[in-house]
Length: 115
Image (cartoon, rainbow, N blue to C red):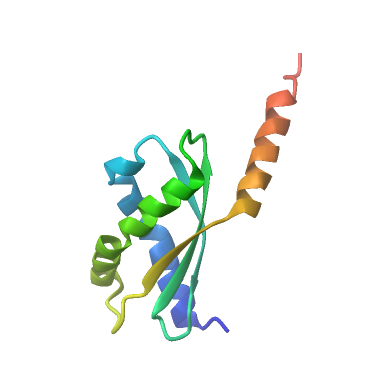
């Protein structure tokens, strides 16, 4: 059950985490989108769902990079959130969102402009 508090913490993470991710050179050139943040009611866990477009390295490698950098990001988010506990970030590849986006891009690519 999501409370106002968990929703607010999730929104703050959703707002600030992409900036933290973009600052890491390990992920430079990869288009990573945070699709959803699900915070547990006790605020100790935050499940981060992401999708990747136009990446030439395996998605599992990107997941590994995200997991490797989660501790510094948690520390930075802790300063922003100002909660008793900073949620532990756990990353999950959002295959469903990624496939929908790729299908939409494929459709757009095949549409002919009006003459």
